[in-house]
Length: 402
Length: 94
Image (cartoon, rainbow over all chains, first blue to last red; front, side, top):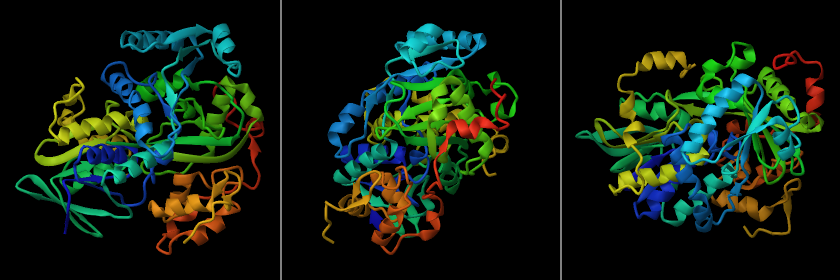
């Protein structure tokens, strides 16, 4: 039996970020991944590191601290992670949306995020491609883009550089406890003795939780995305729409049409290669990663309404990924009640890239029992905050095992 | 195996044989593993040419069952405007 201090389960951006930070801090760590790095959500997303899409408060503050860390990470990585400050504009299409976004932006400004609201003329002047159906737009320069797979690979390779052991294509079959403490992880390739297990399995985190009898309220939320041919610079910022923000935080504000129920909202980013990634949906359909013609057409229709020039661009691919949704939109991080050494690092929904850097830091502080460099209220992120949640009702409502 | 840096495997994205072997060394055993680490197969032709070349370079332990969906070369690319022309999605946002 091999032996390490910590086993990180999950080779997505969160698991690799946690393993990197642990290894760098001198903790002996193994990454156990049933498939390969970026096998799931971390390669089925767009490139946005969004601050504007974070709820003002703890969520936004974590993202603000996280985004500061990427230039430093780049210095430590061999891989170019394509981190770039681009800013975001959020298209506002109705007066009702304008009111919601005005309040949202004001709260963000009070949290130190410089978001302004432009009228239609000013928005089009700033972003000439955005001359479709809109009454105005928000503008913020703090948002950035990144290469999701290269970021994950960057964490992974740097983790190995600092001594982390990589166990890819290795399936976790059980977690053995001893006197209420994590004792070992049982895999199809042997057992690993350890003091800590980090559950970084994103949308699949509930399955790892079940191995130790834990109920983890995370549901897969599907996001479909269209990829276009490479283009010269199309927009100089990320472009979203107010529906995207509503679909994320207040689906009740959307209507009841089929497109509303799919959570259609615009998210447009451009890769360094020039491909546009046009999203997206927010759908509760269990672990189904197929794309649907209906949703893709809604996505494109909505995008072209805001950016009419898209109509002349060719698409080359479509894909879907599963975002790990939690009831309050915040990730589940840290120790869990009743099982010493079992640490959660999952449930980031669409914020995994943005929050990966800070998540790696926080989990490492917890495992190393170090005084935190941040003043986040970690009780708001703990699994324990859901102790009164009816897990059966949650699983049924959000089609967890559909 | 000695890799020749001058050999391009994925022509769309200009990914070399050396980069593919580096990805294999990093743990990639499938086309998707290569793709995520190098951007090979992600260009305009979506792996029509390089997929077969990469498959031959992969270690024998690769799991072919996982590969069904990772390469989907389009017959031809489609203009967004053409897709939207006669579809029922119109009106949903108008």
